[in-house]
Structures are given as structure tokens and as C-alpha cells.
Image (tube, rainbow, N blue to C red; front, side):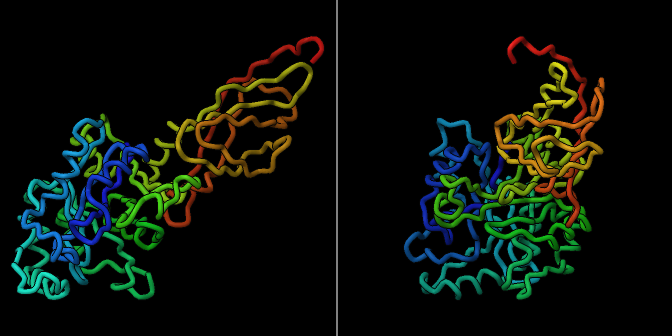
Length: 359
């Protein structure tokens, strides 16, 4: 299931009404979206005074009443380091994650942020966990916290991860991917998360009309339901999709690749000893494969691209006729560890087809 678990609207520092997030998600073919407004950072408070911090979710959910999209309630706990920004999704009441002080000047965004940040971030984390929420560390490499873009896990997050109060970490956010955040996820046993963190318009930021896509979390859920998504997130069954790069733990990646690609035919025709195989890719991602087999190709180099929702024919120089074949590939746009690509093996029986007269 395709999930974007980090989005904003005018109810925090976004630039669109919550209903637009629903329309975009439906156009993008998402299965689920979380509404996650900043709690403490409220630059529009003078214009949109909303004492009920659940309101953005309620508006989005109402707009989705006739659709099959799953809308998840959430909030972004917004602090300076070491807590920094933490998303909590599957919450029941955003108001309990905030000590909502009434500002003397609603237009003074920084004063409001400073006042609301006096309530310890740990209490907000605890309040979210008391609601059974799934919490993840946002854009760990953010330059406000790490000017060199290389994040180090602070004691705050290490302790919460050990206590199972922090459950995931973004490794892709907007236009950025962090190998260091990926390693932190492995070190602390955190679920891998990819998000748009959209504030403006998806079409402007990611240009789907030009073949782009928002970063998302592919959730390997057992069924199409909010409960199944939540269960899979807590179990770490995710794959991040970012700029056509797939990132996951090996077990999850293997499951995705095996479900996405398959050999649909392998034949020798007539007197030719060149094997022709057809591979189908029925996923939304293009796959870039590098041949790691002993065989060479007729008509292709060792690097091939399997286009989304398409079939690709390859000529394989097997040397002699075989009854079965195994082809090993490195998946160049899939990572199972920082710097380590996924691999896939296609195995198939081989048929012999007599060449028709005139062919």
C-alpha cells in the first residue's frame, strides 16, 4: 500500500487547504495519507485561529467521505535539537500533544513557538505513545540541526528508540535522501520511512506530469485497512520509494522485487540457440538491472531497464540449448543497506518453438 505519512496544509505552515491534500492523493493513486500539522510552529495563527488541533484532519477526512483513500490522523511535534521534529500518526487527539498557550500576539510566530516549546518534548512523545501512535524522527539530516548534512543520533532519540517510544525514521524527505539516516535506522532498529513533507502543491514540487513522483512509503500490509498499515509500520515492513530509488531491509526488498517482476516466457525458436526471454514488470517503478550471470545478451549490454507496467524481451546467448535457466541481476536502483544493492534471480523452464514457414 502506498502511504505518504507527512503532509501540511494552511493549518500549520502549508499553503493549501486540507481538501487539496485529498485531491492530490487521489490523483497520485495513493492508498493512504497522513495529515500531520506542526503543533508548535503556527505561522498562520493570526489568520486561522484553530484551538482544536484535530481540525485539519477532520476537514480532510470529510472531503474523503466518498472515496476509498485512507486518511490517518497525525501531528508533527516541532522542537529544536535534540528532539527536533517528530511525526506521530494514528493519534486519537492532537490537542493532548501540546500545551496550547494563547499568544498575546498571534502574529508573533516565534514567540508562540518559544512558549509552546517550554513543555518538555518528552512529555509530547509520551502523550503520543499513550494514544498508541506510531512515531518517527523527521528529516534527521536537517541543516538547522546538522549544518554538514550528516546526522548523528542524539541521546534523546537513542533512549526513546530503546524504550520503543520512537519507532521509525525518515530516510527520504522531499528532494533529499540520507544514507546516514538509513544507517541510523539499521543501528536503532527503526522502520524506514519516505515522505513528501509537502507544503505547496505536489504537481509543482514533484512534476508527475513529467514522470516524477512524490517520495512515499510502500507499506507491506496484510490487507487494505488502517489497522493493517499500522501493524506493518510497527513491524518494520516498509519500502521507501524516492526518485525511482527503492530502499528497504533485505527481506522486505526481496518480497517487493519478487512481486513486481517475473519471467513470462523463455523460448528457443527454430534452429536458433539464442534464448529469448520475456520479463514483465507490473509495478509503478522502473527497474535498472545489471547482469551478474555467466551469460551475455544479444542486442543489449549488461545493464537493462525494465519499464513500469511493460514487458521486456532479451536475447540470451546460452552457448547451447538448455532446459532451464537462472539469470542473476543486481538491481541498481534498489538498496538494502547504504551502498549495497539488492539482487534478484529469475528462474524459468525453457520451451522450444518450431519456426513457422516463411519466418
